[in-house]
Length: 213
Ligand code: NAD
Image 1: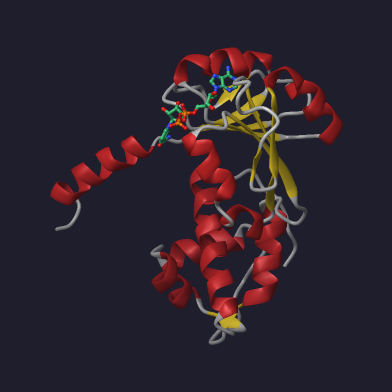
Image 2 (image 1 turned 90 degrees about the vertical axis):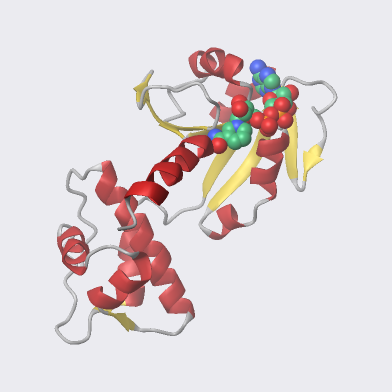
């Protein structure tokens, strides 16, 4: 299978990341091949949707055998741009930012927190595990030196826009925004993704009543 990259929707990309998680799990369990029906049971998507999604990238399972697990993982990694380790910078070394840096799951999928930035002098110069907390004033020079493309925002909502405008968008191309300030998905030539767990709870609240039957 070749890692062709046709124009794909964000919905499909989200499903690909689900497949990748299930495939990694299957690989740990020693499964060399996985059928779309098995993948469906593991990740909750319809087998025909799985086959259609993967066929877009030239991946066809062998009849009766399924997909080669390792080959599919390698190709999904290529499609999703996960073959090389990515250095990430976090802005706002508070409760949420600290918890994220301490979470080991990012490194296992090739994302490394190179530094955290804050404007609190009490925090600057300290470390969260091995990640240094640096002065926000040095953000762009650090981004330029380390070719940082991804930034995570965990500052108070009121600070969000100021920081977005300040980011060197010649280098930074992706922003994961955890603040409650909702940003457009494309701004200043950067792709922005807003994450709000309260929103997810609202969805759960609705689905408990309406989606189970
Ligand atoms: P916090 O107060 O513990 O941390 C905020 C940090 O940002 C502090 O270290 C502060 O010094 C720093 N900061 C403030 N202004 C700054 C600036 N201009 N530049 C750099 N650093 C700056 O807050 P928290 O509990 O960690 O929450 C952080 C953000 O995440 C808030 O906006 C909060 O609403 C949001 N949040 C989102 C979710 C979610 O589901 N998306 C969940 C929890 C918190």
